[in-house]
Length: 431
Image 1 (cartoon, rainbow, N blue to C red):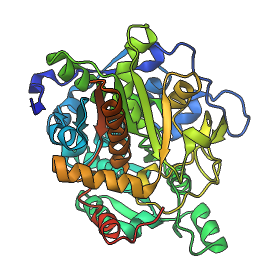
Image 2: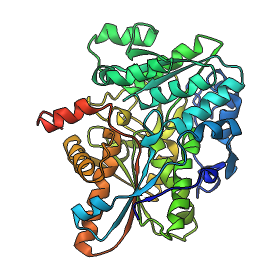
Image 3: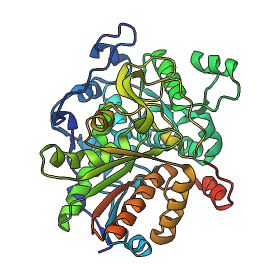
């Protein structure tokens, strides 16, 4: 069986909130000024009340508003595809399935939360949102979502990605977003960094600082984050919830669940709904978060309180971090160039519920090309990290003869990342 689709009416009507089931509670975010637990009232300058409630909620199931479901229906449910040709190429007894989020209009999983965030902000009367973006999938998704709710979108795009991926900028502008390279001359933090280093390539930490500074300067503006925070992972669980239903239809359950990890929403979106059985002791599924070797947050970062941005404007979060002033190398997987990791994912890693591996850039592009030549889909560089480890796990099955079920998240297509593929195919891409 090649492709399994849910019927339209089977789009999940609720998001899954893992905070209801964590074996131990998350450490609270700390106020950057007092270093005491953050008063939710102070977050209202940046987020609508509904998202603050979701951030703190311990309710297991949270209803998806009909207005959000209506927009989801443009592309959801996304297909669960068995990678038959890849299995044959690898000569593996494993069954490899991938959830393909690249069919969304922006081409990635990011609109699952962008639409929800745009809806809640518009409902509260907000007229403008600021945000950061790395490779551009998040900025594209928020620009896409903003048009449905009459929101002006201001995107601070990490400069190295702004230069590497011009078509992502054009996509954002087509949907009405305004895009500037970060660090920019339009904020105090951007100007300060440019004065010290005019050639600074930028980072998500810098872009977040700029977006927050901008949001705090206007009463009609809120800030929107595309990963890391609890409510973002909540919205992304629609991926795993759909995948569970799709696999159940053919009486399968994954032995291994894999997704790339930058801030945590991609991995969390697929993995969290499957962790319910693990918490209950009903499953021995192996969960693998895959990150770039040049930005190894989960595998080499410290588990401690840190800021989410360079300027220290965000609450302090207990997470795996490389340090909020860390500037990652200019790899093509711009969406994974983040110094910190979701507190939820960090805690799961720290307590042994999930594993993490770091892989180099050339290896993920080799895997991506092998996948494209067998399955036909060109993965985004971020998604190629999951492809690489899925292939590694399938080859282990070939050695052992175990017919494991492997599930990974193909979180986006790479059709706007072809310059990176060109460098790889011409032998110019380096680790």
